[in-house]
Amino acid sequence: MTSAVEPDMRNRALWVVGCAMALVACGGDSGGGVSRTGGGSGTGSVTGTGASPGTGGSSSGNPCDEWKTALCGWGQTCAGVDPASCTDELTYVQCNSDTTAASCATKLQALACASPPAGCDVTDLADRTAASQACNRLVSTLCQSLSRCGQDPTNCSSNVMAGLDCTTAIAVKPEIDTCINDTANLSCNSLQAPPSCQGIIVVIQ
Image (cartoon, rainbow, N blue to C red):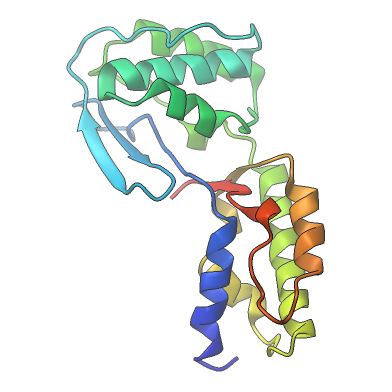
């Protein structure tokens, strides 16, 4: 693939990436720092004050939903995270363990801001398997469409993945099948992103 095509591939991959976030600080951050990336608004880091976090509102009783509510409540109290935005960004995340989700919900509600619980971040609890598989399907479909439209298919997937790394996918929106179908039928005249693909993949950055 020529160098002129490669950045074009990367740019076309960017339209499928939704917001990404990591609310709970990595282990060893004794200050209760929280890093968050969200929907093109940039990346920031804030430090908790040591106060006890709130619950962030009600949940459905489902352990995964309880964890999301507790995580957003922890972020609101300890880091000034907007709970509505947080809840929206976590909507499509599925948990890999109800038991761990329930345990983390309890920990997040009880621990002070200076002591974020280990193993309770989005990166720990998100079930990535389905998201990664759907992301790879989308990349494959995009490459097939670009090839159909006359672009060199050599190394297409690796070049697209430079803009969309499917190993970082943590969730996909319900419209993923529509997005993939629309991508398969892209017009070669413009190769504009289908509306169904806007923010379709949620990733951790």
